[in-house]
Length: 191
Image 1 (cartoon, rainbow, N blue to C red):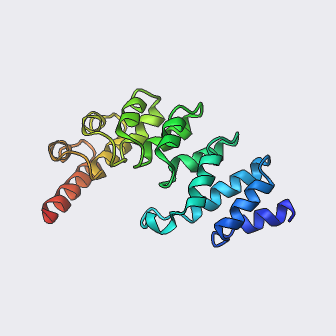
Image 2: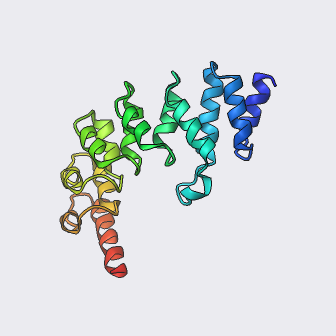
């Protein structure tokens, strides 16, 4: 199989994972192919039905992709819900801030790692605001962030404490205030 044929197969999310693995092994030193393997895994992963795309081969490929030079591959691994916790913990120390920011958004990242990321660059801290695994004490701090998009993600976050949401209903930005109201109303309906 040529590199071009391999890339064409990887562009199809229905290509069997066994074939994706074989392609990765055949072109393991090619960063373009590694990037396409990572993209293939991202395309077949559903955030709405994570169990649907869980597969041992996917997990193994995510582990192997986490160590490649290609930043785009590590980026895709950092955001994938099937990435093992140990890999997320390692990627939280990646030299590329976008990779760390995506680890901060991954709901499977352990709270202790999220706590450590809070002291990182703004782009990384911003990733924490929408993550339901972010500890409540960090969400309370992020609720007062100067960036309205950070506050918006906190207002929409299902893990934001009710007292924080109540405070946010008076936010200076009408959209943030409305998002906090909607989040509170959903909780009260389901209670």
